[in-house]
Length: 349
Image 1 (cartoon, rainbow, N blue to C red):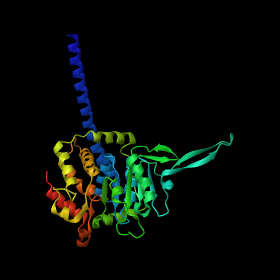
Image 2 (image 1 turned 180 degrees about the horizontal axis):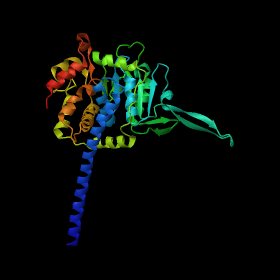
Image 3 (image 1 turned 90 degrees about the vertical axis):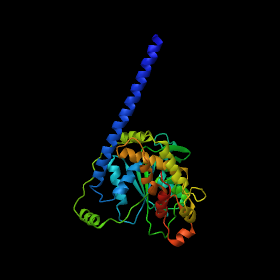
């Protein structure tokens, strides 16, 4: 009888613990939704417009993904990334990629030092600019593949190997790379397998008339106010873990997988436009990105469950850089975004 009572009490305590954990997560979701509003407000003190880009940056951050920013010069890509780091109390670095950039210029290198007293020599690792929380890889397609690969390895593994030793990069770790879509001479485009390492491709367009007027007024004034930190490193790490715990119903996962599989021309479920204009579609990493992004988007909106609408809202930035169009698409001027739009019409929940 005593044992039965003990077992009963343990079960009650376990239920209470589960309830407390779920209750605590609900409070954390509310905290992150409030923090998102504050972060956006802080960023808009320096950045005019670009609301969609800001939202996608936050999705990438809390889903532990990386982003590829594509836009013409002068759209505040650098300022946006730097301002995000300031609003989140994270360290940031910027690397200007050039044709003569070497992998050691990014990752760091071993230097030979001599002890003044003993005369002994030893190697000491000097970390490169890749060791930061938020890294802006400016014009990543201007550097050769060998240097690109050094960055992409760190993106995937969150660590750097130099001199036979592995050095971990402090988390959170977020890479935003930029590409100029109009100036392609003398560039080394990222191969499709490397593009797949980026969770999102964020296309930044020219501002509207009202936004451009405000940009000119602000940037020609004496000073610009800096963002005030909203979250700290420990909070961000905890909220990244929170995103992983967000529940996803089976039908939501099924829809994400169906969307990705329908981008593959050889699949029976692929629409006619996909079969006609694509050579290759997205792989399993695209399905994973859709679900993780949907979780982050839900939490940032104050919801503790990812829905089909979250998956569909992120289909464009997650899939656009994973589609390889064929010659017919290039000849007829068919863009990847157009194909994704037709895909969303064809594949319904």
